[in-house]
Image 1 (cartoon, one colour):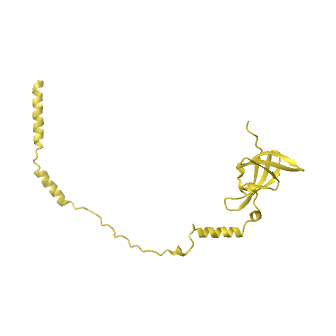
Image 2 (image 1 turned 30 degrees about the horizontal axis):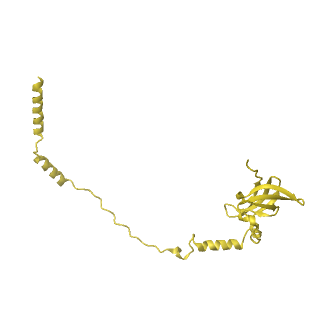
Image 3 (image 1 turned 180 degrees about the vertical axis):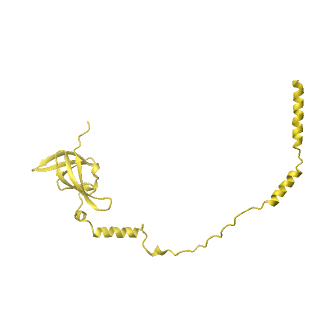
Length: 177
């Protein structure tokens, strides 16, 4: 019974395939009819708007990021320095003002003729400083010397560009063992 089922199945498949024969005349005719009936609906493009160029009015003014504007601002500030900075600009710089505070180490203190002195180590050189001496790059002036620290006041610019006084200090550094 199995032997008869396979040829019968094959015959049915052949008949089904024969029904899909290349007789496509009717299909071709229907496709042509559809092509003729369907009209594409495309909306027309809008014409481009006319460009009206405008003259550049700011060409005669100073560019906001130019060197010229920066130079004018610096000159203006140097003519009218704040009262804090005015005295500092006219004096002679001291040797320790060439170094930043974080490169200095207080290594000791002593008293000579009743006046306190501090010993600072900078670039493997030892400096002796007293109250009133200047050090650091922010116009730092020593206001007090104790056995374990140096108090100073610095003049720095705040976020708004104004010159303000700021307290600073250097602590005695003990030698690492």
